View 1 (cartoon, rainbow, N blue to C red):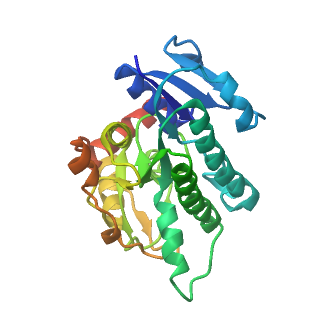
View 2 (view 1 turned 90 degrees about the vertical axis):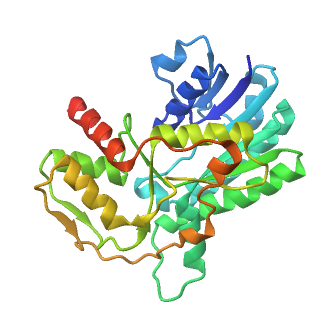
Length: 303
């Protein structure tokens, strides 16, 4: 049996990743501040509570094994006011670097760092003029800084570092303030949805495709190569939103244009959209329409 470590293991993405790793025969050391009973009672999962603990003190709590990979998903302040809290985001950067140094101590030679499309939005903002910054750029700056600092710390400590640039994940099991879950929930409840005009480029990926892509990259990806985790077919946001509306409630009127767009429209030409498929062989299986149907059904059952 091979061992892996997952931070943020009790979140929506983390739990899905842990379950997928267990199905592939891995034993998982799960790091988080709390755990549900499913993880805590599984003999294949070693739960390590990191609440109020320095990373340096965690090494002794991690079983002495040969680890295949360290998946770093944990990140405080991904939504709400904490996205604009520079102390929270700076601590995330330090935590990333501390975990990578810990990997060198416990002998784990490969780290997959879960970054976000927000880091690219932040990078493009820095090259733009006449755009007012929003609090979300503090979050994006944290992701960008952790990517670059973490990669450098990894290289200096003999660790293989693989950043995965994750676009918008959605799907069954999510309960968050993110766009797809919130919008479907509102449509089901016959509430008005407000958006920008939606001409900026977007992409979405269903949760299982995202997780399978990340695992494939961990197993077969090239060190110090970044991998784009998305559908591979980005297009104007309004096209995704109209398709979602037609599936969930065709009679609903979307508030396209209710919110002014003040950000930057990132260019997806900077990504190798097929790199995961080419380097690992994994190809996405769930279309946007199918993913929306499954997510809407899940939300209706929850209601």
